[in-house]
Every structure is written in structure tokens, then in C-alpha cells.
Image (tube, rainbow, N blue to C red; front, side):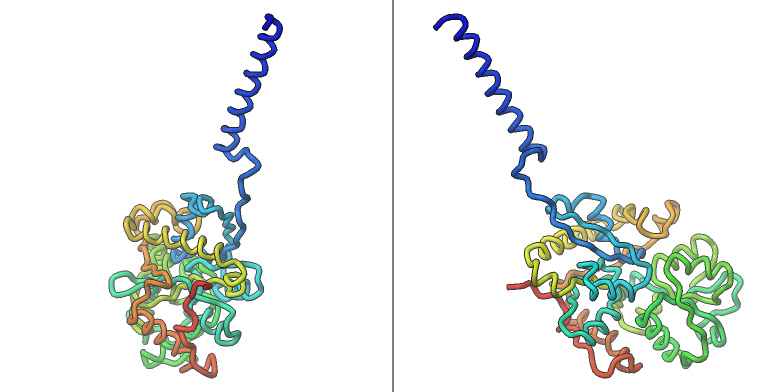
Length: 334
């Protein structure tokens, strides 16, 4: 072999080595053509602390790790989350979805929605409170007769308010219920647009930490509706779950991972409220972390508590019939 042949052979060898290095780097960093695209899902969310598993999973990249492109769709009214699910414009709701509205919608359109998880409070963690301005003379619910009470928009919290009033010997005509999005509630109380709030966290915490008001009842829904009280629901469209069983299981696997992490270190998880809820940095450490349960973790007592909650919609004739909670709990496609 002459020198020219050796020189050409050396060049070919270098080219082959460089090609192998390029291929290896491309495979490691997603530059290769074999990488599968992320699977797109849309997840509706109300900006309250019930959505914490979603916030943590997004911030820590758990969806992308599972091959999922998760788009958060912020919605300011609980009923609009369910409307969006039924319309097919979103695929899932974070645990900030309204459990009551989910049940009503599924009662009216059987088989349309499934509950994959719940969020709420109990004897030790309050998810809802009745708050009044600091200078209010009210010390009990009876003192709110003739007053304006702010509640979340939609039939769930209007019915809960009616039930709480009835449990305290008042009727809904004794007060004026004013529907307010979460971001408007503390401001409405501060400006005296309403005389009280029946609100879910983090609004009660914001009201207290900003010296806007005080609680006259902590754990209102837990006390008079059901204990534990799961007002929030993670929801999936049944049609989506049936058409995309593997993707659905991946999404729920991410939520399960996030919930387990929250339980393990709830104080550390609070940092993920930032940017997703109305909580300011100084208030975040004071906010509670709610109870979260996946569909396959619910105990018989918890299912009974949810059924007790659902029964108020029959009592107040929101529906003509009875919601069966067990029929709504998510079941993986076989």
C-alpha cells in the first residue's frame, strides 16, 4: 500500500468515527429520528390549592418524563371546567374540578365522566371556611341573615351554601348569594361588596394573612356537609380514556407520583403554589396542604362521605334522582 492509499484510508476512518460519535450524541440528546413525539393532553384547572399535584408535576417535569405534553388550561369557574370536559375541549381536570358538578353532569349524561382522584379536608385540615371582615359584628352564621355571601360560581357551592344555611335554621332567601371567581373573592370582602365569604382555600388564608377578615367558621363544609369533605375532583372524559387507555394510565401515573410526593413532604410541596394560585410568596408558608386521594385509594368510609355529599343535590332537588358515586369512580380499560 502506497502513501496515498494510506492517507485516503485514514480519512475514511476518521469520517466513520465522527459519524458514529454524531449518531451517539444525537441518540442521547433527542437529535435522532427515532425519538417519539410527546403525546398531547389538555388539563383544566381552577387556580386553587386543590390543583397542587398538577402544579408540582408540571414544575418537576414529570409529564415530559412520561412522554406527555401536558397543557394547563386555566378556568376561573368550576362549572366551566365540566362544560369544557363535556365539550371535549379538555381531556382531564386537575383535582381542582368540582366533585359535585361532576356528579350532576354525569347524572344528566351517564357515562360521560369518571373521577380519578379527589381533594379536600377533614378534622385536621380545613378546605373551606366562612369569613367576614375584621370589623364585622358577626360571630355566627345566624348573624349573616339579610347579608350578602360570596361563593364560587356554579351549582355546587350554591347548593352547599343552601345546605349549610338550613343546618343553621336559615333558608337561602335569608341571604343573598353572590357568585365570585376565586381571584375576586378577597377583594370583594375587603371592599365590602359582600358581607361574608363561603370560600375554599387558599382564599380564607389570604383573607386572614392580609388582615382583610377572620373566620367565623373554619371547616364549614367538613362540619355540615361531610367529613372528610372532598369538594375537588380529578376528572377524565370517558371517551378520551376509552380511546387512549395507555395515555390515560400514563397521565394518572404522573398524578399518583405527585400525590405521593406531596404526602411525603407537604411543606416542600407548598412552593409549587407560586404562580398557579393567588397566593403571594409571604403567604405560601401559611397555606394548608389538602388531602389528596387517587381513585384506587378511597376507603369505604370515604366513598360513603362522598355519597353523603352527593345526596344533598337530591335533597335540594337539583336533580330528580340519586347520584351513585361508585358508578363514577374511574376504572381502567381492560
